[in-house]
Amino acid sequence: MKATGLPSNNHKPFHQMKTITRNELQERLGAFRSVRSDTSAAGNPNPNHFIIRFDNGVLYQSYRSLVVARLADGTTYLREDHDYSRTTCKFVKGFTGKNAEERRRALERGEYGFIEE
Image (tube, rainbow, N blue to C red):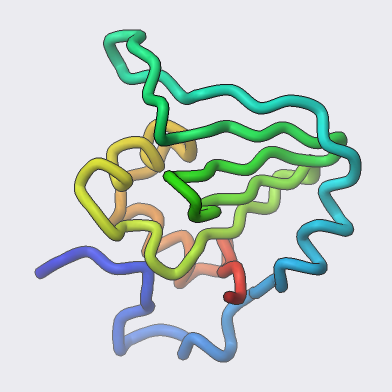
């Protein structure tokens, strides 16, 4: 079974999960601080994956897509397709510390929320 950001049939439907809009996210993040390329486990720069820091949180971007937002209060939000590709999954795991299945469970338990597109 392919891991997915969507909840399984045994848990809360998507519309009952914690969500944040891009506008709400932008307001909560505050002022931009810095951006850098992410690095691989071997320490090599990955020019297509970025860590973007703000006063009140940090974003993880893959190519042109916002994938993960972690606010200063510890709240984490994922884009619905956070597990889009094997490579993105690997880098998101490095950022969140959770693999795709663990992220899915965190969503189901309400520990993580979704970024509304």
